[in-house]
Amino acid sequence: MSRRGLAITFLWFLSFHSTLAFTLTSNTTHILQDVVKDIAKKQNWDWEGIQVSQLVASKFRLGTSRRYEFRIRLGKSYLLFKFPDEEVDSWSTSKFDRRTAGDDESDDGGLPDLVKEVGSVPPLLRTLKLEGPFVLSVAGVGQLSLSLPLNTSYNNLKHVVVGEGMIVEVTGAREVSLFHGSDFGFAGNERESISRKNKERNGFRDFFYSLCKPLVPIRILGYASLRAYKTRNPDESINTVFMSKNMIELLPDKCYSRNVQKTTKKERPIQSLDSRIAKLENVFSMYLGDRVQNGGMWGFMRATVKASSIIRFQLELEKTPEKNKTRQVEWRTIPLVERLWFEVTARIEDEKLKPIFVKKVRPFVAVDTASWSNLMSNLSFTKFPSILVPPEALTLDVKW
Image (cartoon, rainbow, N blue to C red):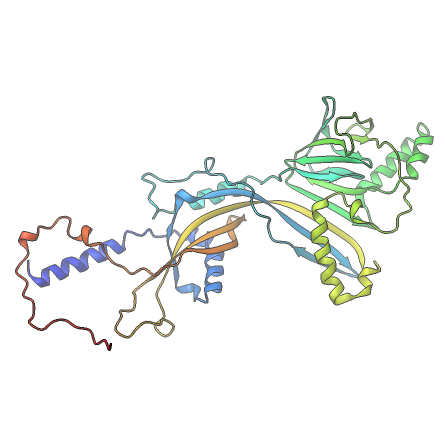
């Protein structure tokens, strides 16, 4: 074999090897568009010149996290604040394993189908603790199931009134919203109307509850299971009374005065909101000063806890290096292609991936090459022609 033939064979092998990387479909490119843009922005790249060359299907991980949103009325304006997703406690792989035959890491692993399937199933919140007093209502066609101490349970509930000194654990809800302010909305109005209907029969009891402080309304989206118990003695029985067909009240041991003008941290049913509300108060105090501290600016607040579907995976990005920005020693060859690996944690939203956290996992620069063992596996060294070494040694212009 001549030197020219060997060179042609070598170049043909390189071109064949470069085609082994999979070609992304338009649907996959659409799903990863926000992820690629986010990485390009952080790396100071031109995102239009970036391609996704590999996805590690065997490392897809799925989980669920919480998102906190606050809608606040300041004067005549409404402001929406969104906090980042919480960290995922545990990751799952078995339920949505989409690896193809051969588990080839250069395959997209069925990412479009995976995102579509996960996005079609609403994520559910982990157990969320609520501390009374409050009135819990379910929106839409959802229903509540309630478990009490001593193996007591109730089903098909729409409203649950929880008294002071009780904790309710909510599991399986899609969303939990807390309303706070001068306008308590539907829940408080319904309680008032029901009390008027039962005035003749429960006149003394109606007067007794008028001395209690108003209940904070909480709305649940979806079907959820509730577990209620007393704060001081979780195993003690809880007295209940049905206010309507699908509305039950958990009676407190005693009633507290409603002569409370300002809500303290102990009166917030969802304790996980405290740290986030404190951050908002600090931000507003910096810009609005004493008006926030005096309570004159806070007219209405809606705090929402949502469940989010989270996916974590690794992908390889490929880009052509820019000659002006690539610093190389003069005698070295500039690589034809740069490839970098990233681990991406993203939220599945509207059949797209919204990046939450991105980190570089294998920061190296690769060049289109072929291993010598693969190149020479089918060739016999006995068929090589004699190679004449020039009498002058090959040297590099290096100054010692």
